[in-house]
Length: 467
Image 1 (spheres, one colour):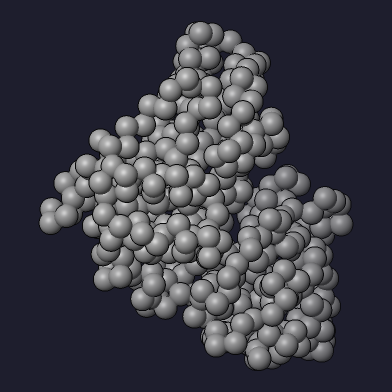
Image 2 (spheres, one colour):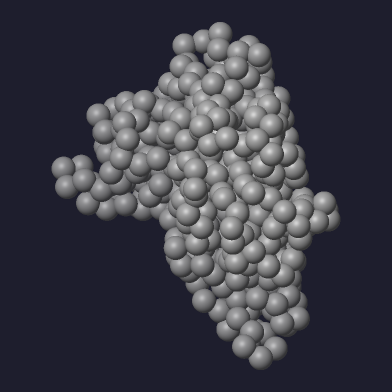
C-alpha cells in the first residue's frame, strides 16, 4: 500500500465545467471514482479509459433528505478497500466536500486505516444558486452575515441541535436539503420572529439547463412551492437579499440558447449558451477494416477529412498500426472547414484544400476546380454519415474508398427539460436533429429554431421541427 492516497474532490453544483481545474486534473489520473449520484455524468467522461466508476446510489444510498439511513459504512469500506488494493482512488462529492457531505465520517475511516488523503475544494450549491440568480448572499445595505443550514438532521440524534431562534437573527439564511421540510422550517422561523414579508428565493437544479427559480416571501413560499411542484435538489435563500433577484437576475433577462452540438461553449457573445450535446463520439468496437486501409495509405492521392473527429481517430489508429505522419508523404489532404483544418495542424499537417463554404457542397465545388479524374481518395467518416459526399466525389471520376473511423451515438441520460425556458434551440448537424426528435419529440411554439448548414436544415424540415 506504498504511496496510497485518496483524493476527496468537490465536483461542483451540477454543470460539468464548474469543477475546479485541480479537481479535473486529478480526476483524469484516477483508477477508481466513487461518486455521488448528483454528479453530472458528463464530468465522468474525463476519466481515463478503463477507470472503475462506482455510484454511491448503487451502494444503497437513498436520494434526498428523507432517505437518511444511508449506507455510509459501505462507502467508507470501499474507499479503504480500493486504496489498499493499490488503486488511485477519488471520492467525487457533489458541490464542496466540506459542506453537508458527511466528510468527517469518510475522513475518520481513512485516518483509522492510516491512509493519506487530500481534500480538493469545490463550488458549493449555495454560491452557485446565488450567482446564477443574481442574488448576492451578502450586501452591506441588508446583510453582513450569511448562515448555511441543513434542512434535516440525523434522525439518530436525541435532540435537535438547530437553534432556529438564533438563526432567525442572521442576515441571510441558506437552506440545503430543505424542500421536504420547508413548511416546518418556515413555521419555526416565523415563530422565532421573522416577518412574513421576508423575501425568499428557491433555486432548483442549480446550474443545469432545467434550473428553475421561484420567489416569494415567508408568508406564501410554502404554498407557491407546492403549486409549482418544487422538488429536490434545491437551495432556499431567505433574507432581504433575495428581493434583489428581480433586479439582478441576469439569466432571466438574457437570451437563452440551447446549443446541441459538440463545439466548445461560446463566450463573449450576446445571450447565454446552455451546452447540451445531443451527440456523443465513441471509438468503433472493431477497427480491422479501417486499419487495412491505413496499411495501404500510400495507394491514395487524397485523404478527405469531413470532420475533426475523423482527424482525431485517423491519427490515433495510424499510431496504433505502427505509422506516423511520415506515412502521408506525397499524399494531399483536404479539410471540410477551419475546425477540421486546425485539428490537422495539431498533428503537424497543413491541409492542401479548405473550402470557403465549410460544407460537403463547398468541398465538392473546390474539387471540381482541382480535377479528380482517376485519383484515389480515402474518406474516413462516422458510422452514420450519409453517402452524399462519397457519391459526389465519385461523380468527379475519382476512386473513393470510405471506412468508418468512429461512432456517432445518442448520449444516455439526457435530462428532462422545460424547452419553453429557452429563446432559441440551435442544431449543428442532422444527428443532433434526429436525437432531439427521439428524446424531446417536438420544439415548442415561440422558440426560435436555427440550423447550421443546409443539410441540418433539411433534416429539421424532414423531422417537422421548424413549426
